[in-house]
Image 1 (cartoon, one colour):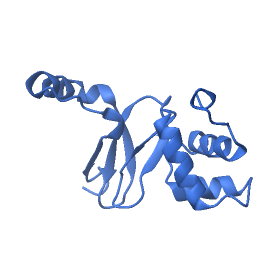
Image 2 (tube, helix red, strand yellow; image 1 turned 45 degrees about the vertical axis):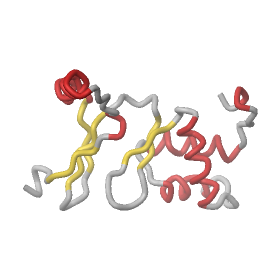
Image 3 (cartoon, one colour; image 1 turned 120 degrees about the vertical axis):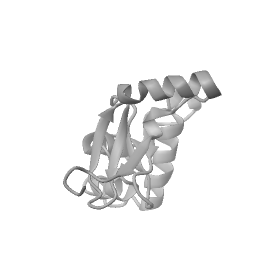
Image 4 (tube, one colour; image 1 turned 90 degrees about the vertical axis):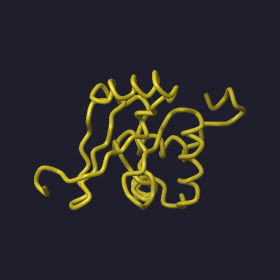
Length: 129
């Protein structure tokens, strides 16, 4: 994909993509921490730019799980909804099929296509409730 756009797969790009895949869900800061274990000279700006490029190429996607930085994950991971506890900040995954009825209704009634990969539902987990 990179070559098709006239770009190269640099070692930094490969390290960022590998870190996202290895970490599962990760903020740019977490990706940066993982990358500098292998390449100390990579700065946070490079991480942000690389994540943006990888998202443009549909290799990663992001969701906002808090008021802070977005959380990135591999697009090859099964699409899911994020359940975020406002009290303890624990994140659970919910199969996208759980929202299939709502997604179908939104499409039929409003012509709105729900992007499951970017859905985060906030509330209280069973322990905090």
